[in-house]
Amino acid sequence: MKIIPVTCAIVKFDDKILAVQRSETMKLPLKWEFAGGKIEEGETEIECIKREISEELNIHIEIKEKLTPVIHKYPDFKIKLIPFTADYVSGELKLKEHSDFVLANKQELINLDWAEADLPILKEFIEL
Ligand SMILES: Nc1nc2c([nH]c(=O)n2[C@H]2C[C@H](O)[C@@H](COP(=O)(O)OP(=O)(O)OP(=O)(O)O)O2)c(=O)[nH]1
Image (cartoon, rainbow, N blue to C red; front, side):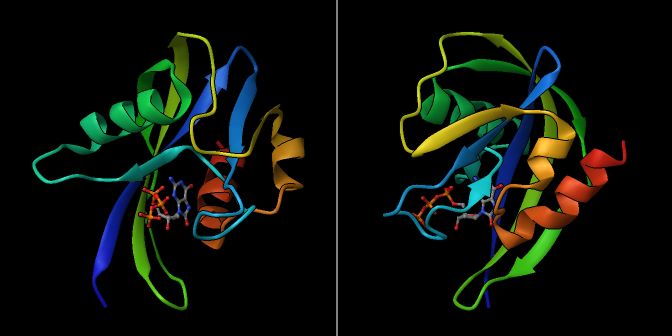
């Protein structure tokens, strides 16, 4: 099965972390994730995550650190999820695709119903 490369960002606003909820009409409906998306042809990982965050959330971020990528197989597709930590820089947060968001501390993040591929990333981040 083809592996789809996807970037995502753990974006920090002051001392809170942004998580977003997929809409009912997206794949993995209503699951929580870190905003991001598929890498396009000719794009670097960093270009991808900055573009996705701008398109999905209308904000600009500064990338801090790359965490460990996760390869995860869902029943009908397989992704390589490439996580970055980042700081919020500017712009008014507006959800363009997602149905909801939270700004949460680490404990609150653990209680969300995450997309499965995110679980190892969440664990690594919590332990940082
Ligand atoms: N952006 C993002 N995607 C994630 C995460 N965890 C996870 O399993 N995914 C999956 C969901 C999607 O199937 C894929 C990313 O695709 P995407 O965000 O560009 O968009 P999508 O599913 O709306 O696109 P499409 O397949 O419907 O065209 O990776 C995550 O933390 N962030």
